[in-house]
Image (tube, rainbow, N blue to C red; front, side, top):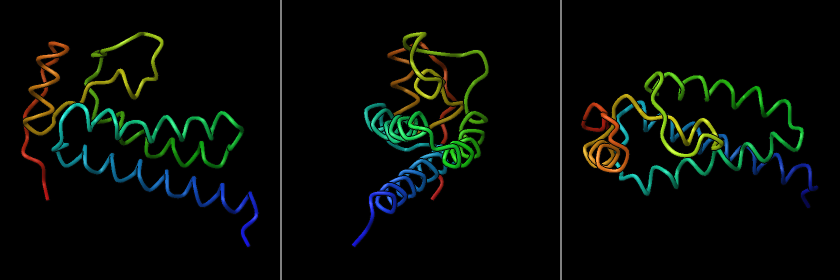
Amino acid sequence: MNTQEEVLHQRTEVLLDEWRDFVRECEAGYGWNVYEYHNDLSVRDRLQTCIDEGDADLAAQVEEIDARFRALLQPGVQVGPEDGPWWHRGVLRYAGPDLATELKDWFQADVEVREPQA
């Protein structure tokens, strides 16, 4: 039987894997649309909830992945509410055709179009 601590650890490991996989997809040229993109960003929201609950070890692990994601964002370009988390406000430097077109249509944000790498 798993203790609550073990269950929470397993949950955070799954969330870390999901965040890491999402960032890899963005590095390759995110190939989905804006709805999927924002849905995939929600994993970072859940990680932040865990961090806010005082998980310092998790915070350090997330920061490593965050650094990779920040490197993919256009400097000085933000969309959405000012009080929103940075990962929701940032705009990718490049993305697949669907997301790039939607970011241009919705936010007038120019994003280099790249075909997602396999």
